[in-house]
Image 1 (cartoon, helix red, strand yellow):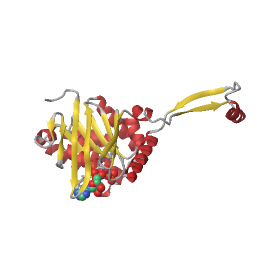
Image 2 (cartoon, helix red, strand yellow):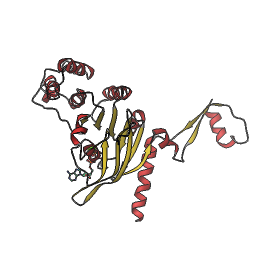
Image 3 (cartoon, rainbow, N blue to C red):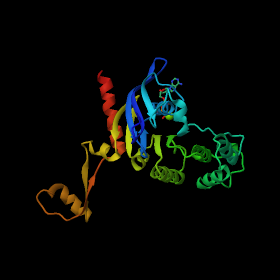
Image 4 (spheres, rainbow, N blue to C red):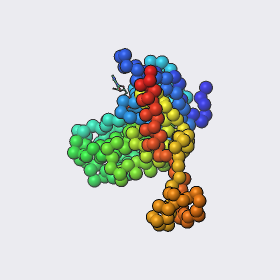
Amino acid sequence: MVKQGIAISVSELTKKYREKEVLKSVNFTVPRGSIYALLGSNGAGKTTIVKILSTLLKPDSGSAAVNGFDVVSQEKLVRKCISLTGQFTAVDEVLTGRENLNLIGQLMRLSDVKSKTNEWLSFFDLQEASDRKVSTYSGGMKRRLDIAMSLMIDPEVLFLDEPTTGLDPQNRIAMWDLVKHLAMQGTTVFLTTQYLEEAEYLADNVAILHKGRILIEGTPQYLKEIRPQSGAYLNFKSEKDAAKAMKLLNENSIPVDAIELNLPSLEDVFLTLIDEKKEDTERV
Ligand SMILES: Nc1ncnc2c1ncn2[C@@H]1O[C@H](COP(=O)(O)OP(=O)(O)OP(=O)(O)O)[C@@H](O)[C@H]1O
Ligand SMILES: [Mg+2]
C-alpha cells in the first residue's frame, strides 16, 4: 500500500561492507514535500543511505521505499521519480557546461532541453562559462553544474548528498533558497550535510546519524528543546548593572533591557549526543 503522505520510508535497514557494519537498523520516514536532513560526521553512513535509496546499492536487510516503491524489487519505478546529486561530481570534464546539460536533457528525452538548459545556466550563474570545457571550471562551478544536471527533470524526490560542500557563502545561500523553493512546489528533498546550521535553517526534520545509527530525529526545534541545558541571556543597560546583578539579582530590582530565552544550537545537541555515545561505547 502506498501511504499518501509519505515520500520515503526506511525500516530496519542494515548494510555491511565485508565485516564492517556501516548501517545498523536504520528507521525513518520522510513526509511528502518536506525537507529532510541527515546530519552526521565523516563515515557515519550518510552516502550509504543515499545510495540505497537511489537504488545504486542494495541493503543487506530491512526495507526502503520511495514514493511507495520498493528500492530493491521496484528499482526502475523508483528511478523514474527521483534525481540524485552525488557527493562527488558526475559532470563530464571534456564537455562544456551547456553540453553536459543538453546531454542529460536528451538522455531524459525532455521536450524543452534548450530552454531548461538556459534556465539552469542562468540560475546557477554559469552563462558566461557555459561554452567553456568543464575542466576549466572552479570546484564551486562544477558543483553548481552538477546540481543543475539533477534538476533538468522535475523529480518528485530529490537526493542531494552534501549539496553545499565546496560552495562559497553566496552560492550556499542561493542553494538554500532553491531547496526551499523546490519543497514549496511539492518536491521532497532528502539531503545530507555536515553543516549544522544548514540542517537547522533548511530542514523540516533532521536525523542525526552516528556510526550507522540514528541517534535522534525530529524538527530542529524539537531537537533543541529536549536538551535540558537551555538557559536565559539577560541584557542589562550597563556593564555596572550586569556586574551588580550577578550578586544582587535575587534581592534587588535591577533594570533589565531584554530577556531572551536561549535554546542550545543544533551544534550543541549534536556534540552532546556524540559525547554521550562515546561514553556509552567506552563503558561496554
Ligand atoms: N565500497 C566500500 N567498501 C568498504 N567500505 C566502505 C565502502 N563505502 C563506504 N565504506 C565505509 O562505510 C562507512 C560509511 O561510509 P559513507 O560513505 O556512507 O559515510 P558518509 O557519512 O557519507 O561520510 P562522509 O561525510 O565522509 O561522506 C565508512 O566507514 C566508509 O569507509
Ligand atoms: Mg558521504
